Image 1 (cartoon, one colour):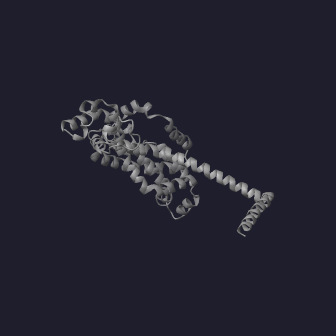
Image 2 (cartoon, rainbow, N blue to C red):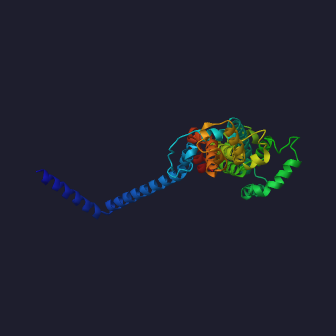
Image 3 (tube, rainbow, N blue to C red):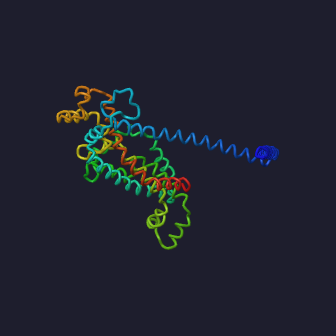
Length: 343
C-alpha cells in the first residue's frame, strides 16, 4: 500500500513538473528563480572574498603581534603562534611613547576635524548657493588641488611657512600651523570635503532658504540655522574622514610639527626603526628576561624582529580607530547613504 502511494506521488510530481514546464509563465518564473539563486551564490562568493581581503591583514597583524620573539624564524608558525607573548606590545608601547602620543594625536585629530567641518561647510555652501563671477572657475581650481602631490609643494610650502609667520606665531614646528591650514581650506583632502558639502547643499530644496528669507534671516543665519542642521549626513562623513586622515597623516606631522615637543603616533611610527636601537639598548641594559631567548647580538640586527615590532606598533596605532568604528558604524553607513542619495 505504501509503495503504491509513493509511486503515485512520484508520478504526480513529474506530471506536475511537465505541465509547469509546458506553461510559459511557470517556465519563466522558474528561470527567474534559478537566475536569482545563481546571483545569490555569486554574490556570496564575492562578499566572502572581499571579507577575506579586508580581514586577512588585520588577523595576520594580530597573529604576528602576539608571537613570541623566539618564533620569528620558526617556519612552522604561520598564523597561530606556538608561544604567545606581549613583549612586542611592551616594546612598541615604549617605541611610540604611546601614553603621550595617543592623547596628542587625539587632540590634534579632533580639533582639525572640527575646523575642517566648519571651513568646508562654509566653502561648500558658498559654491552651491552664493553665485558670483568666477565661482565655477574657482571651484575647479579647488578640485584641481587633489591631483597636485604634496611633494611638489614641499619646498615652497616650507619656505612660505618659515618666512611668513601668522600674526607672530611661528608656523613651522608649531601645532597651530595645522589648525591654521585647516581653517583656510588647506588641510588634508579639504577639496574632497568642499565638494561633498557643495553637492549636498546644491541638492537641498530651495524652499528652505526662501522660507528663511521670508522670516527675515540673512545669509549667515540661513546657513547656520537652516542649511547646516540639514547637512547631518555630510557632516558625519566629512568628520570621520577628516579624523581618520589626520590620525594617519605623516607628511604634515613631519613638516609642521616638532615631534619632541608634541609627539604624534604617525611621526613616532615613521621614525620607529631609527629609535628601535635606543629602545632595545635600554631593555638589554635593564636585563629583561623576555629577550634572552633570542640573544642580544641577534636582536639589534635581525630584520624579522624589526618587522615584528614595526607591525605591532602599527597595530597599536590603528587599534583606537578600529574600536571607535564599532561605535560609529551605524552613523557612518547612514551618512554615506544619505550623502550618496542627496549629493
